[in-house]
Length: 183
Image (tube, rainbow, N blue to C red; front, side):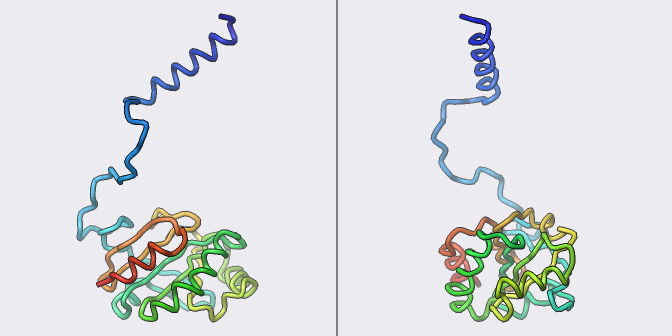
């Protein structure tokens, strides 16, 4: 075996050696993380939602704990400015999800704009003014980090402030099922 082939072979051996037990190459798809303790604060399903305050695009203070008890639920959707995937998700939310759940409040957390004015500019340019959701400007990405979110993450909290969903948005089917079963 030539030296190049030997190096490639050794590299493959080293890579596979770090994989541990390779007997199960068909994952179950089930979540193997330990369940979070109810009553603790955190972004995981079953935990109490971490509180935060941000400005909306009109410059109003928005505090999560002030809107949770007055609604059946709260949805946060984390979006990047000018993201075509996010815009597709938001259009789906606007046309298919929001009308079906009038007692749930929907918020878009824009975590890429550097200011409230820039977030407002994006909201207007994208046609989201009066759309059924309020855009919040997370200019320091504090809420993004607090909820361990990324582009397209959707978080649902019930009226008691318990996180019921924290995952990437897909087609809205799972989100609608969670919202339909809120206490």
